Length: 421
Image (tube, rainbow, N blue to C red; front, side):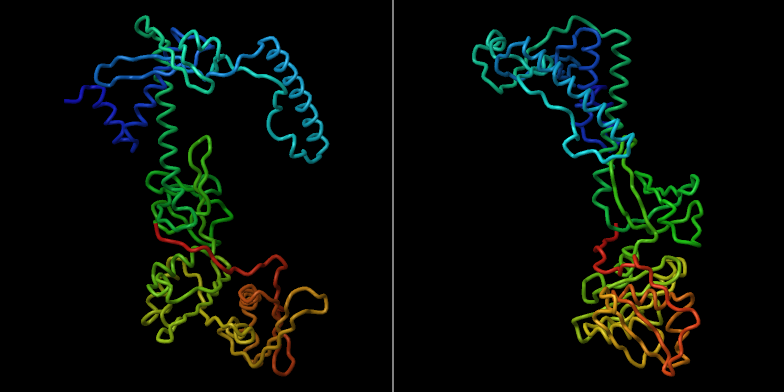
């Protein structure tokens, strides 16, 4: 039958989701800190073995066997290294004050130029031979230390602090490892609260962060609302795992397509490209190698059920599904959907010798539809096909609001594959 100590350890494991070995290592680290506080000294590298069944401990001073060195020479080398480090730090501070770029060779600490010796973690071979005549270079020597008596109050407080800190670190590591697997995928979360312009999202064991730039314009984030989010990145900080979420990333749309459309999930329908203005409109180019499948019909679903579910998840954002084509002329014409296109002329190089230009002619009554409100339709089409687009009427008319395609408006293609978490 397990004793009280073992029961307490297993209870912590269940509450924190930690392994038995991780909790035992934490206890041993805390006991080592307590031993160092009451009975050890700064030259000892103390490790403690704890017997859960008996409650007894064994302490060891653990050192690596190294070659004999002249301690006076070690001191001179260390003093020279510290002097160089201080000189470098002063130089770096001056360069930063002048706004200069720090050279890469200044990264990291200055290395010692000569013999070194760490009396806490290393022991010279001649001294090691006195402890173990068979000691060899590179060997880990474990020298048992006496345990004079019970720990004092201060040592017990130190042990408690170490246990709490180590358990928090272990829990953070587990949560980080768990959510690192969901990076670049979609997860479901519950809106927790707002802190300034940042939205905090409950992901069960962790809290995700939705920054202002990752929030869809016009979308409301009410406490308790459940939404799907794209996990942009997962990193481990001093305060625990930082999970950055997004509602504006185009990969979120692809994730929703894979969730709602079986043909997109199994690869029968392939998303070849995507251009999105979050909260406004998204254009998705789809294709299939199976002649028996209509890629656009598969995405829309019977009576629009599939696409309506996706639109609802995106807060009413409009979605245009177009047929992808390997022929650039046809692809440009499709990209300007829902407008009808009369002709497409593509210039491989423009007069300035930069990017491709597509001159699109549409019926006069389709001119406004082709350009879209505020030039949105032609702007998204331009991003989708990776070229500039100029729209004109059949009689030579120009749109009232000329299209504006930003120079940095790169097309969204090859969206990373996502899986529902």
